[in-house]
Image 1 (cartoon, rainbow, N blue to C red):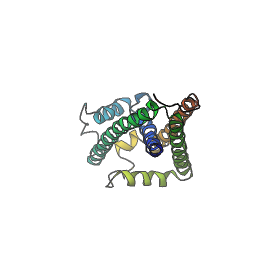
Image 2: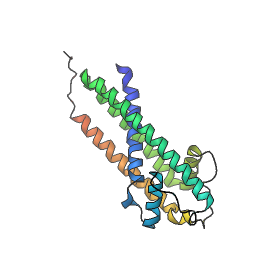
Image 3: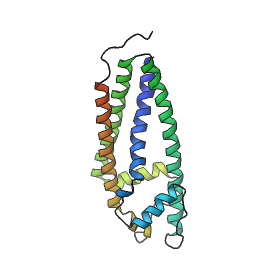
Image 4: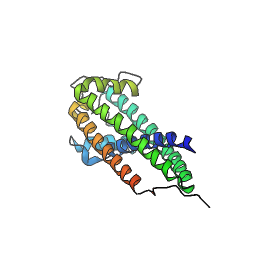
Length: 194
């Protein structure tokens, strides 16, 4: 049964980061630039409309298509991870192995907070470097390298991504605190299932 702790912890790690990322990505109140255009992009990501070909450059259209595909993949992976994590958690809790569940929660919190804090520190020290690494990891082309005059840069300047990362870090750390709080309310001792 102990072998479940690490996979469950990793599942929770992924769920916390990705769920917060998706929530913030689709939180329209977060976007401060041209509301009509950012709404158009968010609806495009949801598959509700096409992009205005007269407003966006061909490069922007292709890059946004890549972003849409990435978001779709991440969303499906998140659903799968939530399903798998729920099954693992249910097995542990049905067997009343509360100490194992607590260990998985704490492992997940340590892993998540470590990665998030290190990423945030790296971005504060050298945001451009962190931004480049992020894009090179997630995209297989250079379509994300825009001319500063591109309309997409006007909608999403560097400051947007800095603020996004800051808010994402805050949201994730709040989620971790909530998970740790839940772990405090678990029974202190395992009980034998009948």
